[in-house]
Image 1 (cartoon, rainbow, N blue to C red):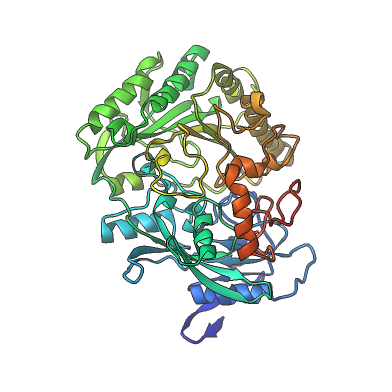
Image 2 (image 1 turned 60 degrees about the horizontal axis):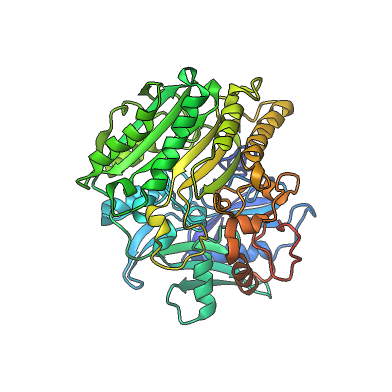
Length: 529
């Protein structure tokens, strides 16, 4: 332990500490680091001191040079817990939620999780961030990537309400400064720093300590929530195509957040056939007089268009437990419904990919998914934890109240490809899992270079679902680099922010924002999230 004057102590955890094996990894058990130490940080001043000490220490191992930052630990790639990491600065003890009268805004510390934000902020204020459904995701990364969730079609993204951010930044002389940047800051450089945190991704510019939000929305007092499933064994290819098409067309055609149908959010869980089920979770504002009718019409449009009969959900699907007892939509208090969906899955390894869709899936894309989910291709591949999750999107997301660094603002669907496995599985099995997700993704977007390139049908990828395959020309045959797929035309501006606030490129990983001096053709350096 080290102590400062009036500053909470910093707890330093070295490899000999019994806590070390639990703190050198995150949510994705695929990535386990061997840092010299993990530092638990409990205050902004402590963050600045810990960062200063870390960046001014000489590396003991030439292969371990990065200093990374962790809030919830949900980074999907090895950006936080990579083999080249020297120090992990863990801000999870810094998890307060409060009202700040000086800034006239709600303050959420960077180590808070989605569940902190819901269970603490809502009872105190009646307001909520429209964030994600996995309770343990940390705010430090979730918000900065443009976090979204079940309220987003009704109320937009978390970053649409971000007013200020506090960041510990490293100056050219390796000194560390705590910078408070606000939306209306008189300093244009600080305004740009705030803008960069409205979708520019975590681990790019500095060590985030606190966020402030203004004009936060009130969630509904009650919602209608449903969870149902269909048996895979009941599906023909035409049934599958009818389901996926009906789902996509519904959200293409219901994009007005003022209408109850434009507020409805859903997740279609296209699990591998070995799971046994295809799942659907949907939620709508029950305070809206038209909410019940909107849910009924949505289920008629999707479930009513196919021959297989729906029933209760019984199998875990991706990061969510089975939503049981809700085959018939049920009216629940919003916070209760949010808790019912809470889950992050068991301890396991994973690989992920993403896509923004401006149009529903084409017939060719649907046939590819049908094949790779185990019906015609990869029939010898069995994994009940492989899935393609299709989230509804748009609505209020596509009507932002102000400029942010989230470039994708006209999509109707957001897709997350997921595959999971146990860490004890042999390398040959792991190779099959990764081959499956790479192949289905490449084939689905074959017409645009194996990725959801920027065109009239697709609009790139979600930075909070990072995928280093986008850096690799073996998998990305398009003209769009990974940076274009994440940030579109905002990338040069983000690079200027990087040059101003992280001139030494301390915060770096395989897909971190590149300093302008770096050659345009190179990949990212090495980082924090």
